Image 1 (tube, protein in one colour):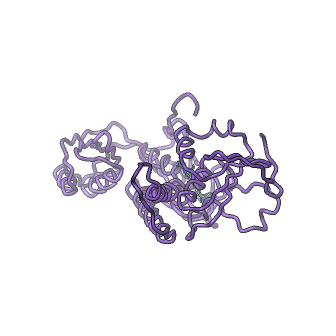
Image 2 (tube, rainbow, N blue to C red; image 1 turned 120 degrees about the vertical axis):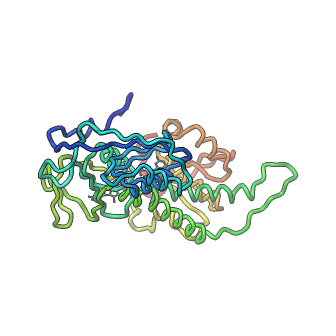
Amino acid sequence: MPGGTFDLADVLDLSMDDHKETGVSDQAKVLIEGMHCDHCEVTVGAALTEAGLSDVSVDWRRGEAVGIADAGFSAQDASDEVAKLGYSVTSIDTTESTETEEAGGSDDDYDLLIVGSGSAAFAAAIKARDLGARVAMIERSTIGGTCVNIGCVPSKALLRAAESYWRAGHSPFAGLETSAGAVDLKALVEQKRGLVNQLRQEKYADLLELYDIEFIEGDATFVDENTVDIGGRQLKAFRFLVATGAEPWMPPIEGLGDVDYLSSTEALELEEVPDEMIVVGANAIGLELGQLFTHLGAKVTFVESRSRRSLRSSTSTSFRRELRSTPGPWLRKPGQIRAGCGSTSRQTAPPPGWKPTDS
Ligand SMILES: Cc1cc2nc3c(=O)[nH]c(=O)nc-3n(C[C@H](O)[C@H](O)[C@H](O)COP(=O)(O)OP(=O)(O)OC[C@H]3O[C@@H](n4cnc5c(N)ncnc54)[C@H](O)[C@@H]3O)c2cc1C
C-alpha cells in the first residue's frame, strides 16, 4: 500500500466482534534470552506448547513469547523446556485476560480461508492466528509456493555458488594466478534441492503445527462468496484471502511453441551448463539467471525490448553495478547488439517474430 502501512486485521476485518463467542483465559508473557533467529522462534514455540501454552507466538527480536496458559501450564516446566534448548527464561507473567475471543460462534468452517500457501499466505495466516482466528490454507501444488521452491531460495543458492566459482577463476590481484576446476552442475543442483527441502520444512511446513493452521491439499474454486470447493469438498469461511501468486508468462513470440525453451523454473533445474544461452527479458529474474550461467561458463545473450533507461528504473543500482563488473553477458535489443560489459558493438538480426513493446 503506497505511502503507509496497513493492518491485516483491518484489511480482512478479522476483529469479528459479532462473529465470535467470548471466554476468559490466562494470558502468559514469557521473556527469553538467547534467541537469535527465526528457527529459535520455532523451537521455543514448540517447547512452550509442550509446557502447556497454546496459541503461542514467539518473537526472537523482542525476546518474548505470548500465549494462552492452559489448565496444565506450569511456569517451571516452561523454564525447564526452554532451558533444554539453551535459552533462558527471565520472567513469566500470567494475567487473567479480559475477554478472549474464541472461535466457534458461527456456522463457518473457518474465520479465514487462504487460497495458496506461499509467503503471502503464511504471513497472513500467522497474523490471523495471532488474532485468534481459525485459519486454513489450500494448496494445489507444493507447500511454500514460489519463493522457497522455485524462486528466491534456489536462485540465490545457485547464484552464490556460481559467483564463488567465477571468483576462483578470476583473480583481481596482480601477480596472483588462480584457477577454477570443472563444473558439476548436477551435484550443485542436488545440493540446492537439499537446501530447498530443508527450508521448506523449517520455514513453512513446521509452522502449520506451531501456529495451528490447517493445511488442505487441492485446487480451490469459488462456489459463491462464502464457499470454496476443493475436489468436491465445500468449505465456508467468514473471510477469504486469495494469495495465489503468479506464474511464468510466455510472450507471444512466433515459433516459441516449436522450440524447447526453459522458464526460470526449468533453468534452475538444468544439470549441464549450456554452451550458449539466450535470455529473453533482462529484468531482475532474467538478469539473475543470465548472470548465473555466465558465471558458470555459458555464453549468455540478453534480448530485451525495453530501453536501457527504462530497465535502469526497475533494477537496483548495486545489481546493475555487479552485472557490469561481470565480463560476458551481452544486452541486445531487437535489431541491435550493445555490448553489456565490454566495448564491442555490432548489428544483429532480431529473433524470429520478435516485436518490441516499446523502445
Ligand atoms: C526465479 C525467481 C527468483 C525470485 N527472487 C526473488 C527475490 O530474490 N526476492 C523477492 O522478493 N522475490 C523474488 N521472487 C518473487 C517471489 O518468489 C514471489 O513474489 C513470491 O514468492 C510470491 O509469493 P506469494 O505468496 O504471493 O505467491 P506464491 O508463492 O506464488 O504462492 C501461490 C501459491 O498458490 C497456489 N495456488 C494457485 N492457485 C491455486 C488454487 N486455485 N488452489 C490452490 N492453490 C493455488 C500455487 O500453487 C502457489 O503455491 C522470485 C521469483 C522467481 C520465479
